Length: 455
Image (tube, rainbow, N blue to C red; front, top):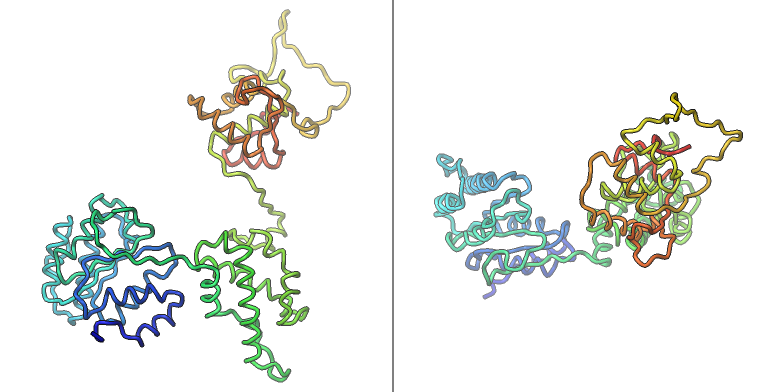
């Protein structure tokens, strides 16, 4: 019975290589043990960057088991997946048997039945073979019977074990019972900090300390570990817990913030053990989310050229036009709506006796309406402006009213009248955004709002 259990030395090596995955490693080494009968199917599921693929590959390599690994994201169709599966099995068998298998007749595979026949011919001399499908739940153009059929290949071919790596399996997605599942749970705070502490960043990476100053490399390494572990905890509590969804994103955020964080140590302002002072000095790094936004323009260049990023809400297409119409209704006088929004009219009026009526010249200069603040308007007027500025007509009135309610819930529109029904036509509203915001919002839908704004 001792030979049926996994080797403890192997388990210790795998657990040291992949920390915080002790339970999953023991489960997989037991299920994929070469001394036990082959398992027909195995499902390994978990979120991204939880170690599923790496652990399975390492276990199969340590067991010296013949296996083929298929990355389903590289296959663009179901037929491409089947032919890639046959080719990968051929390559794995030739590598184990040193080229004893011929490739003749195995290039085409158009159906699942053809896949089963070709795998039977390939594996009839093998005692054990593992076929791993990574990301099979994201396969493009996959027929509905793909997953149940792959799960039953191990029943048709006794020496075959099919491993399906998925993100979140649906209930009974294989239409079969009794299939073992191994779950890779997401890393929590303690596990994430333990993984990042295994490969710390060093403070003096670019400029090592001089040994003549009495500061040895071992002391520098110890100070780097001291600062790195506490720094990672601060990054997790402030940014990574909500923004970094996996260990890879957590590490990327920590790498971005590391050099700005240790800059006061490198210039001699603080020592390596003054972590609390470093946190106070660099608190701005953990308060904003600018470090999480990828950009091809460096921050110094953006400040030098005056590039500013104004935040706008990610609204649907028609909602953007609704908010632009609300802004025009708040800042344009109602008497000028025919001039700006009647598509079949000209900006001149005919007088009764013939000729063209000329507008009166103002005796005093007026203040721009944008500086006077938004005025209240009725909802019917806003809808009329909305239909006038929209490039293509829209017929769904219910959807428009729903979008108005959404703008009100976001406080982009504010109701000023106390009517019972807020979506009644005579209800008065007022826009609650400024000119820079509405200008950027109009640019997202390529709407020239300056042409419709009264001076």
